[in-house]
Image 1 (cartoon, rainbow over the protein chains, first blue to last red):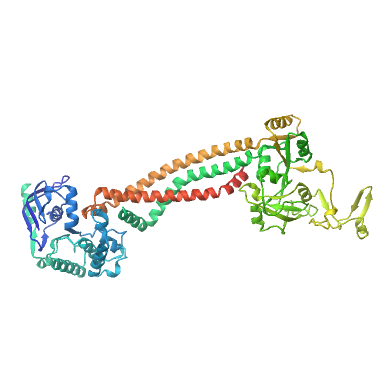
Image 2: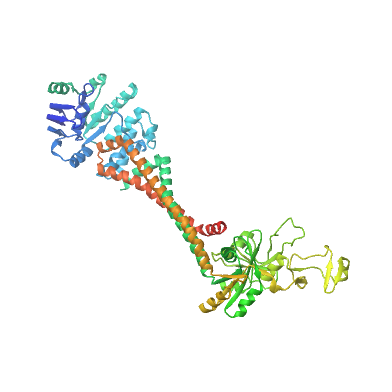
Length: 224
Length: 394
């Protein structure tokens, strides 16, 4: 599902540098990205999503070479192919649960919001236990509930790849287990590929594979 | 576009206090100069129209503005009076038609205008209910005066005593309402129109009382001095003119010398107008002739100067408020930077996000402009009230 080869990436305003000789995530698998802070876990997620573009190397996601696409094409690819979940949820406080879930349809301009989308949003919310809170502003939800809204938003357009950046990082143990349960239930039911950044080593046995970003980090140190 | 409008609306509705403050600021920026311009403009038009419809005004020497305000708008201080004979003098000159105006008295709510039937024809006033006055003691109400007094034909209206503490003064006159005029949107709507003679009855120059030649009244007679009978205070004076007592009403003195506040002169042509004005140019002349349009233009020139300063102040204030609003929007955008980054990550383009922000800003500006438009409309409706205020201030 994701193939990164001979990648060299550097932020233009920082000394941070990431070199990834080989990185592979199989379709339908669940993969955890681990490593210390600053090892490039989030950067790899952003590269796989086409949000960032490497200076060198190839990033092929869902059989599409993102490094050959322009910004507009990468955006179109991202909308249809990738669901993103962030550690801080990144919900819009002024919108209700329902509107936050539907946000990808409203903000992209590439997808026309239909009754089917509304139905799916309601279905997803119901599926994660938020069916009775559709009209509630997200500011009035608990942390766990917010992350569930963020997951529903990521799943609205039924993406084959789910990229999660520490989705349980801000949650208490109860909510952590619940959110993870939701994610795993979904990806297994729909054979969705899941690539997740996590610091929580207790969760690792639940993933098919764990990739330690320390290796890219060590390489970076050598290069210095 | 529908989605952007929806998202913008949700954002503005959620931050309703901030939105309300911004919309109110925008409303004030637009409304203050525009509304003031409209208000002054409408009032000026109203004042000018009335003045221009009145060719010449003759009154006792004094303030021309006071004369115009009192005689045309039935407002402001009462000017010095002139003799009723002046009206006859103008009429006899053959240069103009003369309509006397006596606007010194009031009812509780409205000015009483003593005049002749010719005034109705000159101003084009039409009776909506009832008829014009024919007899002493009758009055016709302007539409607004009728509303304020809640009176119509068949009702009665009291004149207001000049001094309630003067027990020897003139009693208020109970006037019979015989008609109500169609609204005209002019000061005539506020008038209570009576015959000039009725105004003199209100002043006390004419009165009616029990016949002192009757045997029953002999006890009240103190002495007889030729044609004059002096009676004590127990003689009954009528404060209402009826069919039964109208014969008892009589004038003390020569009506030609009785006071009125102005004569409205309608010259037959431009030459007559010039000749008539020339007659009142002498230094010894106790009467002045004024062209109301000229007097009002002078007044409005002063008002316009003040208005310009207000508008200038409004523009400066508006500029400062706009700059503050721009700062608020900029700071708000900085605070929402993370939100914008998220929207880009989930598929929004910078262009579309720009359109979303623009929609929010334009919605606030648009709402402010629409509100300012509504307020300006309301100001237009309030212009007559503002005109009256303007007259009182002047």
